[in-house]
Image (cartoon, rainbow, N blue to C red; front, top):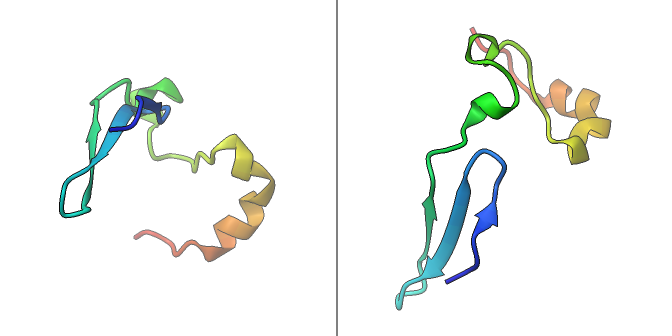
Length: 66
């Protein structure tokens, strides 16, 4: 079993069962509203800071949602 990993929106631990399948156990919180209020969710694309310099490149790869 791994140590607790902080994934920003939730915390998780991982373990491998004898058949070598990896399982993840995760918390429900804190959730997506740590970045923006609930009424703003989904109105703009939030990118992790490490990828922000690639924003334009990444946006070009996304297909529009209708």
